[in-house]
Amino acid sequence: MSTITEYTASHRFARISVRKVRPLLDLIRGKYADDAIDILKYMPHRGARMIEQVLKSAMANAEDRGVRNAGDLVVTDARGDGGPMFKRLMPRARGMAYMIRRRSAHIVIGLEDFAAKAGDEE
Image (cartoon, rainbow, N blue to C red; front, side, top):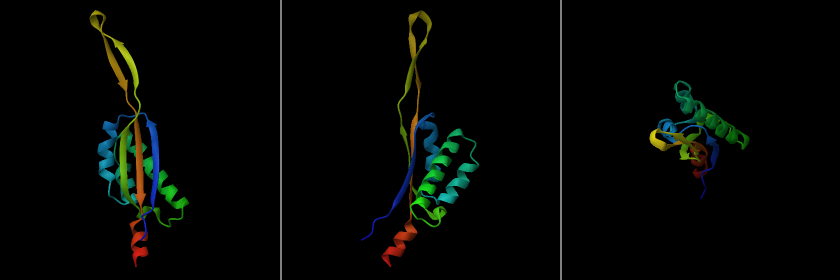
């Protein structure tokens, strides 16, 4: 019985709201790593640049651990979790104050090699 090896990379405390990142992560989940990079490359969002860097880092981690073609890995874990918030007060009328929340995110990408698993089973 063999286990699937997972190669991960993360960008913690990214200065972007998780709400802006999650739709982009949904686009690449389940795709091959090369296809995911092509998808993100032509997206006009600032979050796409961050996710692209994390994906390339996960591919480099896989190559460092001995994977021959990191482009054939599949994006299995594409997560955007909420990070800490900077909280500030904005003065408003009649002595009130509104809370300003500057949100951050933790972006995690996990790649798995299903081709190696199929080779182990044979």
